[in-house]
Length: 257
Image 1 (cartoon, rainbow, N blue to C red):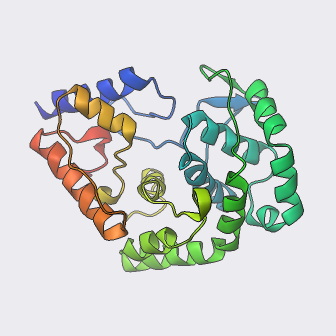
Image 2: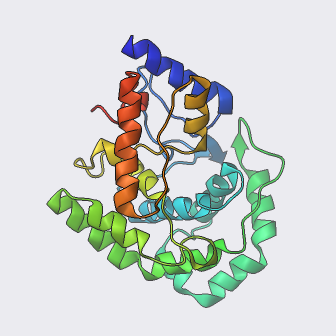
Image 3: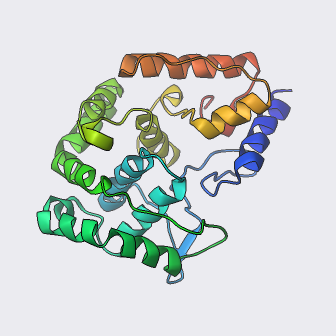
């Protein structure tokens, strides 16, 4: 019964959205978004190896780009543009001239990367939003502190300080705002690649709009989230998993490992 119900949710999620970033094994083990972007450029597969610092930096860049409104391909191809053009390290984003070049050429860069990649599916048009680049500078400025906080949390087996640290950095989202719901995405990807083996599963279940749509299709009622602080987010994620447990669903084997 549990396996059947879990498969129903996975199938509803995939069939409703046809998403390239759903990377599953045959037994529904979730490999993570960045395990395979399903994008090729110059016969090279686009993926992030989070053991490498530049790719780890791009994971945060992905979260920043995906925190904006718009289609998910904008974020995926933005990160692809950075990786294949050697713009995947903090020092590049500390250079004001580099940032101005990216802003000035953002439309051409988006068009070029879209035309150059080989993939099964992509939209007719993508865009690199102008406000992303200031956020990339803020990420680069705080990169040393982010890495240090993450390592300390690993040593202490407590990722709440990292979540609060990242949440308190202004400007990683639009209009000097702070990222929120994409913080579990970062932890999820680190956990999927087993970079840190003590990240709790309940911190990694990202209930984005597509997951909610799939749950609604199966008449699975999810809790509401009112406040936007880390304690409230964690409580929400725990409640989210509890609701799934009521229906005996453990999607993508993230929560029950």
